[in-house]
Each structure stands twice: as structure tokens, then as C-alpha cells.
Length: 281
Image (cartoon, rainbow, N blue to C red):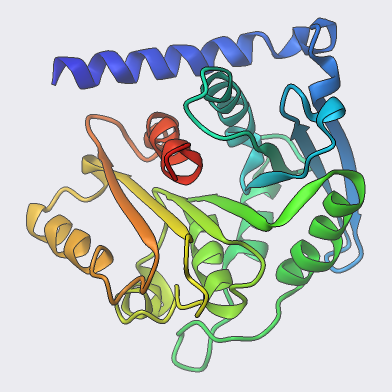
């Protein structure tokens, strides 16, 4: 337990340091690795912030890179950039570009929750179960965001990973169900996979069933405090790690301890990135 607490403290201190340094980014030697642009969505009649971190040798290599897209980029981009860049520097994981997608409102603005609900709640049938039909946010991701990223950067379009948290995890699960072609790998951090029939479809092998599932990876993490009933936790773990639930996928279920819904995703991020981008993969 002491070791877990020490690891947790180190990760959180690491992330706090990254936030404290955010005002100094423009003065660093690696300024060319960081970019931000705004993207106007005609589908949603809304404006998004897009933060981009590029690998150290991006501008000289001429290579195309895997892409990690972070939904909820307001809170996820800084820790992903710091942890991802460090693990890449230490040669623990392969190189990849990081993109954080965030709303053009303040983190504490009440509009943030309204926009997240508008975009992340999946389409439902008459019984309140997810259904396969295009949504405005899906079309924005497919036709506006990914197209713009492909235009601006050398992205390996066959190696996209989608990171999601809480409610955005519902959208990510629905997205794999609706259109498995957009993203090859998925990271679910404290994701809402219970509502709208998502869990039942996951357990039945309907969500992750791309057909060409070779070398596709999924990472799912929660904290023990989010699932306090041991019996429910073990049943959920057993269902989500059954081979027929993710046919052909490389799946990792990860559990943190003594964290919360608000902090578990920080602590699980190094393990998530190693699972998706580990060099032994």
C-alpha cells in the first residue's frame, strides 16, 4: 500500500509541476513541439481549442506518427504531454503525437457540462439503448477535426488512439460500436460504461468487434472507490476481460487504489500509455 501511495504522489506532483510551468511554455527550447489552434465546427456551430504536442524529432524525421486524441483535453492534455514525452524520452514507449480537444469555455463554466452532455451522450433508441446513427459530434470528429489534423500533420491514420474519461467514455464506446474505422485503440479512464445498454453490449462482444482486430488494444481503468462492492467489481472485471467481449483485442483492465473519480485517470495514465505504445507491442 505504501508503494502505491508513493507512486500516486509522484504522478500527481509531476502533473502539478506541469501545470505550474504552463505559463513558461512559450519560452522553452521545445516551443516548436507545442501548437494550439481553434477549430470552428459547422456541424455543431461551436468553436473548439486544439492543443498539439509533437515528438521531439517530428520536424526533421519526415515520418508519420501515431495519434493520441484526448477528449476532455481541458484536464487531460497537460498530464498526457508530460508523462508521454518523458516515457518517449526514456524509450519506454514508441513515439506518437498528442492532441487535446477542449471546449472554448472556462473549466468551471457551467456551459462546459452542457456542451459535454450535448456531445458525449450517445444516440438512443425508443428503449433508451444506444443505436447506430450519425451524430453532429461524430461528424465533427470524422469530417472536421481528423481531416484538419491530417492536413496539418503527418499522422498515421491507421494508428489513432482515443482517450476518454467519465461521460466521454460513453461516447467512445458508442463510437467503436458505430464506426470502428476511426480509431484503432481506446483508453477508458473511469468511463461511464454502465448506462444506455453499453455494458451489456460490451459483455456481448458488440462494441469492440471490428473484424480486423489484429493488434488493436483497449485499456480500461477505475479506482476501487468507484466500484466499492467487491462482488460487482469482480463480476465486471470478469465480463470485461472475457475473450468473447473483445474478440482478438489486447485488453488490459487496471485498478488504482485510494484515488477518486477526479484523480484516478492521472495515476493510470502511465500504465495506459505503456499498454498502447509499449515498444514490446
